[in-house]
Length: 129
Ligand SMILES: [Cu+2]
Image 1 (cartoon, protein in one colour):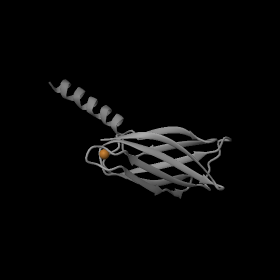
Image 2 (cartoon, helix red, strand yellow):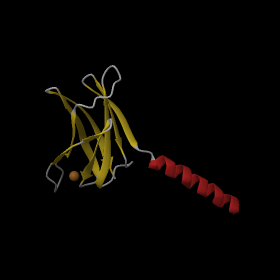
Image 3 (cartoon, helix red, strand yellow):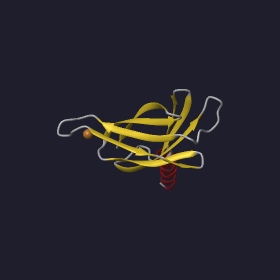
Image 4 (tube, protein in one colour):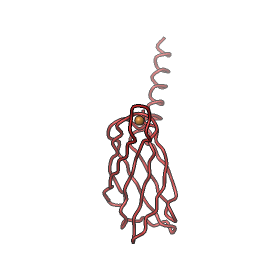
């Protein structure tokens, strides 16, 4: 019985590590490489931290851009379409901020990177629990 409890504990601990792993995604936006990390995985209703790093084709970190996140959910029965946006703040080499999901379900995410009068973007979706 004691052995069983130990196995259960180990299982729960290892599962916890999997759950605790950040959501991470790598995407291209124009000729830039964009890495997006969210501190909740799965994403949850309410605030979720979002961290974006941008690298140019030479692998150098891009720190002179304005990075914003637009997130939306199309209309559904009893709910008008929802659209939000937030501008991320540069801290060292990472653009940081948070997104506030008001409802569970699939959200469309767009990371827009404006630099030198040109904007490139990349899209992905997040399933909010
Ligand atoms: Cu909805």
